[in-house]
Amino acid sequence: EFSLWSANLANFESDLRRIEPYVDLHHIDVADGHFAPSFLFFPDLVARIAGLTAKPIHVHLMVDDAIVEAQTRQFIEAGADMISVHAENGEAGLRAVRLARELGAEAGVVLRLETPVEAVTPFVSEVAFVTLLGTAIGVKGQSLSEKACDRLGAARAILREAGCEADVVLAADGGIRHETVPLLRAAGAETVVLGSLAFGDKDLAGRIGWLHGLKVAA
Image (cartoon, rainbow, N blue to C red; front, side):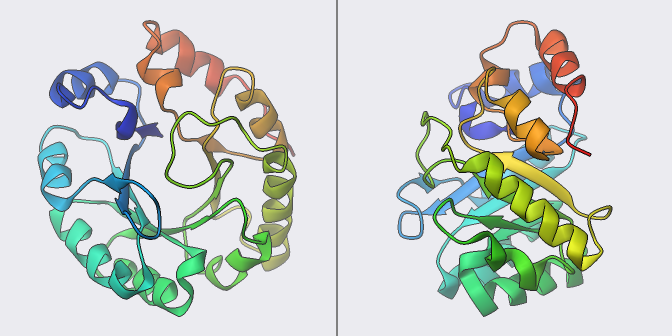
């Protein structure tokens, strides 16, 4: 996944063209300034990006319970292929997951760093992605938490116990650096959300080759 929050926001189209041969999934963060401290992206931008790429778009909703269902609908109508909501959204998050699937999109669940990993349990039978944040929510440039790798292992155990380990992608988001990605992969992350590690690398082919060569825990 490539996080478009790390793209050149004044020259989006150029960066999209540069990453298109290498990206599997575009990751777009959405934040309401309440659930997360940032204000981030909007449906019109997703619609524009959808017209510029052939790759799927994954929207990560960092929004309050009261608006998560409405935002799910708006972003899917704008062109999102997958919506991830937060486990902390509770029943509203579960309804949003089901709505996303009804509208023909895939769904995922994300967990804040401070929330017990067990909070993903009600979601795992209904989602295609489980993403664990390795830093505080909605703030760029932080170091990976010491808890991140153990939390990935715990999430993988939950998926295994639920019988859906083979069907759900386990992802890591936040604190993604050259030295942390091997640790996250070894802890069980099947994919990571790349920000500056991708957009700041002049040799994207080499970077992606390196990433694909890292082993995931059995």
